Length: 325
Image (tube, rainbow, N blue to C red):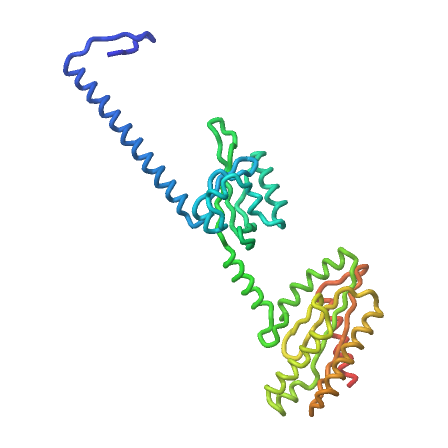
């Protein structure tokens, strides 16, 4: 048996019993090593099966974006078989609108900087755009150098569509389909910021249906609802899709008009709307003509204002007109 004595390897004789014990110990060590090797292999096979059969798209790419591994989840998600996908570049499944972002991620990986999971978009073989949740894992060699990248991509398209529908529901008026007060404020605030930044002018019309309560009380709410929908049709036929039409509630409506050139535009726009209302009354010849009080507020990017100031100015102008009637 070899032992160390003062740093020098020497040998001592062993009895038969000691030799047997030594051989048994070595045999047990080899057996444990074999068991661990088998367990590692089983664990690796299980992991490989999990990766292969995962519902998520799991891929491996080299640092140039060339795909070297492509699991069944990726086949189902993107429509490319493993044979088709291997050798493709990851940019081949990135839509044009996200390519700049993807190139930036590749560069970030090469520099070794950490990358957080993120929402992005991918494109399938049949050109469908998917929303995906992307997780990136850098693969390194024994020296710690990044040599490849593993990505896990989960399809969240249905979730995003549901979120969009819920957002629309929360921003729209049930009866008319127009934006409600919340939707109007969210969009108007963004437009005011853009107008100030890009030196654009805006016009806000605040409209109130006169005598709607009287119509409801005298002819019933069904007739009152018809008056509301008639006015909605007039608004839709008068203004462009770029303009924001909203029902703030009850008999109050707003229209945020974009692309306004000057103050003269205000008079032209209001005159056009009033002519459409008059034309409606003449055509329908109802016992209760559609009557609307209209106030306006002008947004000048040289002297910007808040959304509340913008709305209040138009609201006050509308009430001044209503009092004249």
